[in-house]
Amino acid sequence: MMHAQARPDNLIAAHRRPGAGPTILFLPGYGSDMAGTKAVALDEWAVKRGQAIVRFDYRGCGLSGGSFEDFTLDHWREDTIRVLDSIDGPVVLVGSSMGGWLMLLAALARPHKVVGLVGIAAAPDFTEWDFDAETRAVLVCDGRITEPSPYGGTTTYTYALWESGQRNLLLGGPIAIDCPVRLLHGQADPDVPWNLSLDIAQRLRSDDVQVTLIKDGDHRLSRPQDIKLLIATVKKLLETL
Image (cartoon, rainbow, N blue to C red; front, side, top):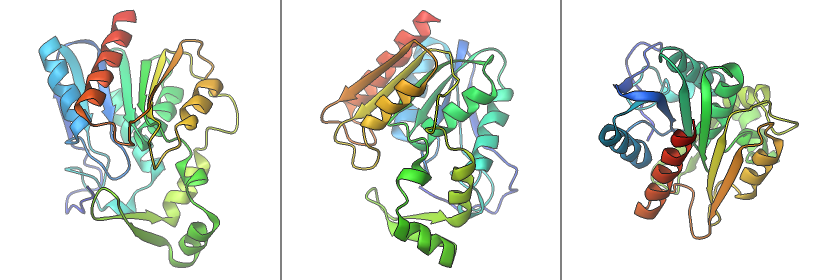
């Protein structure tokens, strides 16, 4: 959910669990926060395992400062790298939807710190392929567009968000990431086409890339069986590092 906060815009709320490395850093999706089902489930598993994990809210989301509409992909990329830099030692990024875009951008920015990636319906470049000509026209004219969300409430997009997306596009060529990457995607995802994960896999420079498709999986992949698969994927990846 999206929350306007009367807190300082530079405040990033984070929840840190000490433990063995590499540290897991969870990146939520667009308008989501660190209290989501997948983030909490991964946190609970990490505690039982004794694995270090960090969850956080982008600015304008959850418990962090600022109003949601004032921030863009550029800001949330900065937030991700800021939290990443605050963690000692190597990090495995787990990114959901837009968080999957941000995990790729962060891995490109900190290649020696990020040692593994797990994407859940990763959505790089969504402002390019998901914003049709009519949506872009409204954004240019009105500066924002608000639509009903299939998950409840409404979702707002801004022209500034689209502009920031254009500055961070990744799918026009190779993606220079060399660490192991695991991509999970539901084939019943109505929001992010599942073949996007295949496109990402093809563009990644790393040879250690695996894509897992869940035939009846939706966008959120938050059912018990989806959570079980996510945890198993993260566990197996950690065991190879």
